Length: 292
Ligand code: PLP
Image (cartoon, rainbow, N blue to C red):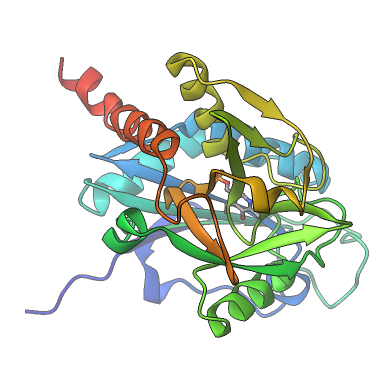
């Protein structure tokens, strides 16, 4: 029996993802003139959906694209998409581009055009077991991105090249550095633990305002663990007890090596274990609340 194709949603219509069609004149295709979100779903419940939709609104505003959908329509659409794809644990991707223009003009379209709105979902990958038991490897890469990394834009070439460089160096993720400071991963937020205190770069246009970052800060507060939002000079790697990356689809990933440098004792640390356990409890809470 043929396996049904996952359902996607394009401009108001649900359809099998392979049947979704977008014009080559779409500005998302031509220019990367688009923003996106990635939202994890646990037991059929999108985790921190409101925060993701608020970040989408900020990204749209930053690129001066009006929000054609609005939060409620996005919420209804994504919930239906998750249901049509069988509930459970999923990774929802959504993208909004400036739409399909008549030609290839850099400036905004002369006449108003409808944005292209797209969403799809795939199974949520579980963080690989060996990364939890042994920790991940990171590879230092210079951060060559633009100066508005707070916008979740689809123009990801520097991130892609950094990730590929990491893979070619035998590492799991790129650790981006700029002007002598550690910034974030190619698609993950950075945390460093020293003497029981969690350090993470402050929110600025140099990093993405990670939703998981916010969750980690809240959980640390609940667990009574101190947090310092502060710049991280490269030299701090030598003194770090623990290093982590976080993202919506990969939760909190301990890093035990950066190139030839061993981090702390070379195994995932106790502060990571506490915060990751609290995150796991939190991601399943929606379901518990829904059934209780
Ligand atoms: N930093 C970058 C550059 C990212 O691309 C991502 C996620 O894609 C993150 C951080 C983590 O953000 P979030 O926790 O919202 O997934």
